[in-house]
Image (tube, rainbow, N blue to C red; front, side, top):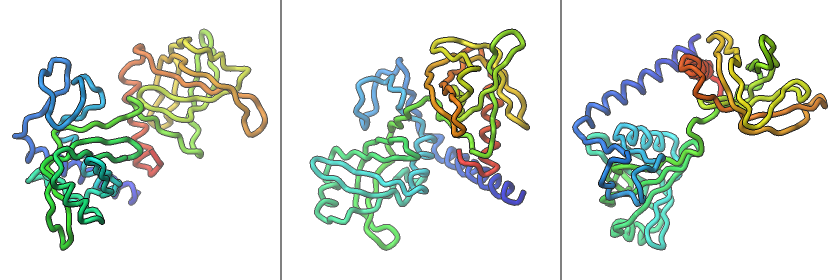
Amino acid sequence: LQREIEQLRQLLAEKDELIQSQKVLQQESIIVATEKVLHLPIDLEIETVTDKFLVSSRIEILYILRSMMRSKSLTTLTFGNDVILTTIIGVDVGRREIIFDCGADAAANLRAVKSKNLKASSLLNQVPIYFTCLDLNEIEFEGAGAFRAKFPKCLRRVQRRECFRTDIPGNVQLKFKLPISEGVFSNTFIKNISQGGMRVIGPSHEVPFEIGVEYQGGLIDLTSVGIAKVSVQVRSVSEGTQRDGTRCLRAGLEFTSATEQRALTMIQQYLIKLKIEGQEL
C-alpha cells in the first residue's frame, strides 16, 4: 500500500509540474498541424503538414524533452559530415532552452556552433525523436562546457503504432471470450493489449481465426475493473506449439468501430492499474 501511495504522489507531482510549465508557456502560440495550415515551421524539413508524426504542441514538446533528460537518452547531433554524441542535461522552461553536454572534440564543438543546419535525433522508450537545433551556443553549465539551444518549434516522434501494446505479465491470465455462435464462446488468453487491439492465443481446434473475419460481442475479463464488451476483426493469424506440446493459434485482433468507448476506457483503466501495481507497461 505504501508503494502505491508513493507512486501516486509521484504521478501527481509530475502533473503539477506540467501545469506550472503550461502557465509559463501559455502565451506561446501553438502550431496546429492540419491540412489547412499553409505555412510550415521553418525548423522542420517535411513536405506536408499532414505528417501524423509531427508534434507541435509546446507542452508536449516540453514533456518529451524532459523525458529525454530524465532517461539520459543518447542524442546524436548531426551537421555536415560531423556527428556529436550527447545527452540533454537541462531544460529551462523560462528561457525555453535545452542544455546539451558538449562533445569530446573541441574543434567539432566549434563547428557545431557555427553550423546553420544542425539536426538532433534520439530514441525515447524505443521511439525515434527528430528535431532541428536552433541558435546553438557553447556555454558553461554547472562548471562544465555545454551547448545551449532554443526549444524546437516542432519535432517528429515516429511511432510505429498508433497505440502501443502492453505485454500482460506472465503471472496474470487475462482472458478473452471469443463469440463462436449465439451464447457460445471460446476461451483465449491475451498476450498483449492496447486501446487499438490485442494479440491472443488459443487452442487451434477451438478458435476459428480467419483473417478479415469480424466478431461482435467478445468479452474481456479485466478482473476488478470489470468485463469489457468488444468487437474485433482478425488482422493476422499464425500457428504454433505450446510448452505442453498442444497446437495453438495466435491472432492479432483489431477493435472495430462497433466497440463502445466505455469498453476502451475500461481497458485504459486496467493498464493504469497495472502500472500503479508496479507491473511493467
